[in-house]
Image (tube, rainbow, N blue to C red; front, side):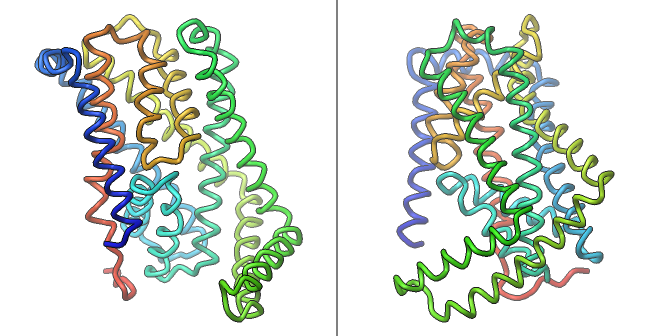
Length: 338
């Protein structure tokens, strides 16, 4: 294990210890034991199912996009690609290794780098657009509900988070639609790093990237012409994000509460994701817990907030690492698909 991998593993371990300590401190242990014993099992199981539906839908979207390019692509390949992305996104700062490792994984499934990059950027653009629309709707609709209970700094972070998502969409659209601009930008970047002696044969690299860029823009053009397919992908992403946002509500019901409006909790989870996205720690360690505490303190009474936060993180983060870790090993040779 190299230094970078060791550091990421250390961050995850420290965040787990800090999370457990935070939840078990100040009489948290007795609260945790008492509340777990009294959990409504149906709603608790539903929270797990919702998270696995999120991963399943992500796999379906990858499958649909790749199948549109490569007819013999299998769903189990998409499931592995999704698992690889989930795992490496969870253990690296800002999830930076998620998509590169998915591209590498797909290359072992006989999907070219140009095609896999196209699929993953299309998928990311659809996801970012949908989550930004969700966030904008909830800010316009529910922001006033939370203004009294959150600090000005948290409110500002929420707005900056929304703006950052919108800016990423803008960059991706330019990259997707402005072919000549993208090509010139890449040429400048390649020449710059070649002058710094970071790569050899810059002309060869430019030609290779140009070939992949041609494939990327061709696939994008075909997707944007297929409005029915595009609509299907956006609808699936809307359902996927609902599965993510509804998990705190299912945990809330598992604690035998039923007073809160489901849309208030969906909005709270949307705001948590916006705030957390600004902090490039593996899994949003620290930021996720603090944001959860800020936005959900109005829904969970004092002796249930910490246990609820712990269950939420176990389901949405630590369980994801545990379940997807076996799929993270990528074979050196091409996978044989039965």
